Image 1: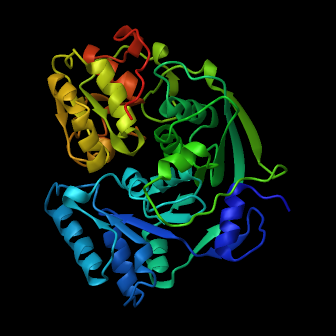
Image 2: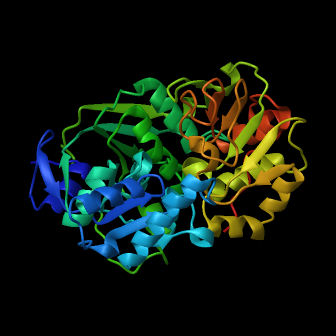
Amino acid sequence: MPLTIAEKILASHAGKKELRPGEIVIAEPDVLLANDVTAPLAIKIFSELGGKKILHPERVVLVLDHFTPNRDLAAAEACAEVRRFAREHHLPHFFESGETGIEHALLPEQGLVLPGQLVIGADSHTCTYGALGAFASGVGSTDFAVALKTGQVWLKVPESIHVIFSGSLHPWVGGKDLILHLISRLGVEGANYQVLEFSLAEGLSLRMSDRFTISNMAVEAGAKAGIFTPDRITEEYLVGKTEKNYTIYSSDRNAAYRETLKIDVTAIGPQVALPSSPANAVPVEAAPEVKLDQVVIGSCTNGWIEDLRTAAQILAGHRAAPGLRLIILPATPAIYRQALREGLIETFLSARAVIAPPSCGPCLGGHLGVIAAGEQALATTNRNFPGRMGHPDSRVYLSGPAVAAASAITGKITHPREIVSAPPAPEAK
């Protein structure tokens, strides 16, 4: 029976040779992830279930990244609870303070997620790791707590939608633009409990940072997971990150899909998602002229070093518009250090940006950039629902780092070519 990459990974972790969409399986995950928002509830449920010992502590990853550095007393208490639990159970993968970063960038960087793995996380954007060829999906704190105790999770096998990207990328176009365009076609429920399986036609190459961004936002179309088949770029990314063996899966030629979508990226320019849905994506030229109060560059979608390089190339020699707050959040300490070495942080400071610590910060209306009633923000984050970044009467637009940087200079939504005519510079090695 021909299988998709998702079906192969689930079958291997459920001890089955084959399975079918709709089937319920009990599987053994390789990685279990939670953060300072979701872990406290999971810890409580674990205790209520009589949990005394975590079955596989080496598989558990706890990251304090949402409300840290602690924004208030409630955040401090939540983080203290997670810290106590990690120490009590001698968890080897606990990240806080100067070692922490945005979980969905930190785990790949640390070599903690690998191709062929089954990853569950008490965070909806756990699907990010599908960029490495893993089946990665968000679960609730209850399922996470049960997995801590039993080492198992139940899953319904999803159908898959095959998305084939072809063509050539225009300057300033990246993974954020491709996934916003796709979500505008599918809608926020168009892939409900499906797998979005992404393939690249011959001649098209995507950086890992772009793939992480695309897989991350698969959930914004309702998807259970978003998976790329690993290739040379994937394996080059993993060099030096792990000594563990991993398995590369790919879909069989005759695997069954719910549907196949072919997308010519040549026809896609920089995109902007209008309030208040990621599905409201339009070409930047079609965006309304609005006065921006804040621009945020960072998050688990666009806080990678490649994103910071793009933003710095546009911001170099410019300053943020008067009255506009520009916030930059490198996704991890390692990315922050690399940005320092390359002079990117100096460029941002010269542009009057605030450099925030690696954290989720304003993305979820947490801190480090919450917006007030009536304010409008453009962000490289992944959601723009009402109240997502602060007051319910604020408005959030989504874009990639190039559009965000250009817009920070003008104070309104702007195509990067209006600021810099040359295409993006080659990336530093």
